[in-house]
Length: 455
Image 1 (tube, rainbow, N blue to C red):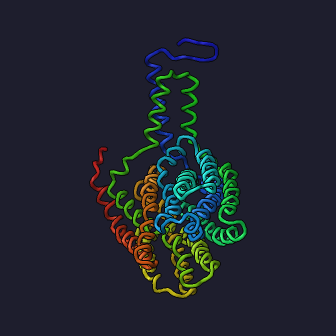
Image 2 (cartoon, rainbow, N blue to C red):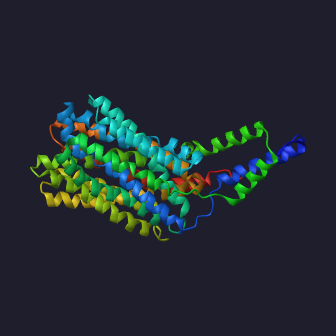
Image 3 (cartoon, rainbow, N blue to C red):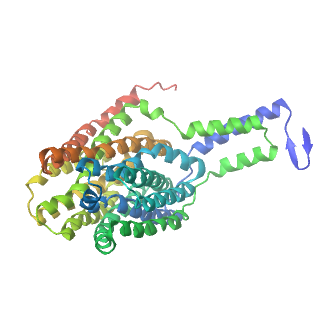
């Protein structure tokens, strides 16, 4: 062993082998999730996640309020104008794998804070867009990337802090989405009337920037064993080759695409893809449908608010229900999606505000069940150790579906000169999503039984 000041360099082969063994074992320890405290600082994490979901979904789900204004401002078709909503929501999900990997590498706090800044810059500069194409790039793509860096860590970090109350805590955090939709829809109407759409976006930018404060409360759970082993390695003074090996091994663990080979995960991804194809269509088309029915702008915004408040209440209710031992999360997910899809197909027959409000409440409840169930079903099927990568990959499929759903509905409304076809399309995709997920438990059972026990 050679010494250089206070730094020790290991030159003996046996000692180097010992250090490599410690490196491998520490990497495995890091890959194994630490014990969830089920409380304590976890509730601070849950509140911070709630507020970040409030900001992200409050902004992205309220774009439909500006739909008619953007049609007039940019003079493009309904299908292309719908890209503003679908791109920001879709890109936010598509960057899920990158977001999950980035959060694993640098921490949820760093990923979330950076995401807030990127989204705020995109929203602000989008107000200077000379055309709809530039608006889609700045608001949709850049804003979506920022929100994507916020969304995945906000769900994953809650799941790591809770085990017995995981569904309840996830449901409470997801409540921020519903409250965001409830608050931002009428707020956007008010801001639009007072300042125009550009002034409204400037105010929204300032509101979104507050997310940096809530990101600061994110605290990573550490594995004491892994930390101790890494400290021992560092004190021994591993050489550059060992450090490189440890880094490459860590990166390969954190960006794992092996889930794509799993039949049950593939089927669940297909279900979520179909659900997300239709999910954003009611948000974008209910306000303009209300306008076609000669309802006021405030009544159109109220329909979105009702979805939001119903979503909030059902997040908590379903979070409590999902945690019950007697509840099958996969069966619950399937039934809820079928109900949501069938009722969406009936929207063209709703011609009065009271009936549309009833639908909005039911649709919001469907979303309130679907949101916490995503992470819970991934854990049920593949285990907590696959949650971060699984959730990121799932969001990739959700994102692609979110981008194509509303523009397809917009094209259908252009062709048919009405909005009925858009709701038929949304209802059909959501219904099929529920039907596809019914045999998911059986597929998972067959997959597990076919595995080689020696692997």
